[in-house]
Length: 238
Image (cartoon, rainbow, N blue to C red; front, side, top):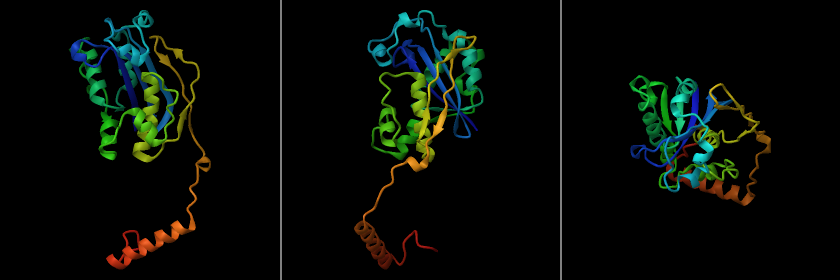
């Protein structure tokens, strides 16, 4: 199974107000393992940022002045995500913006879901697992032990890398995956194509919890009390 963890940065919060995508970042997983393939592109938005948006991303129109417009990178982006399942945090936001960008290119491009195998919203997953708690990407990184100390600003590729670790932790506990960052190169379309080596840490390096003898005895006593009252415990052999 091929999955693409995806994130975007935009000029504002609502595409319906004419806001545009300024960055796309993607990380590829195959059979739930990072392959090392990523796709990242800064995009000229053809409009100003809304107040506050630049502070979130650190991007400026001056920096984006020589970057391609979405029309110039749309085919390369769709080629990268084609037929994969997308993993997106708060998918309605990113999909809405990307659908809007595709609609500006003409009906022949359709919608994002026309090009991919499906979309999985990690925010919905997190809310189901942690109801009533904060489930932002930063909150999930802290809760699941994903190191995000290097995240000072929002960046689409960095956030995709963090989300990949969060997603694996949410779904199977595979949270100890690190991304090394060699210098990125540019493909023919000017997109940054970097290889990030994924390393699974040695389980022997994980901290081991030592349980005191009195805690073991208290647990055994509690289990025995349940056994006497109910007849058996759920984890007793059938």
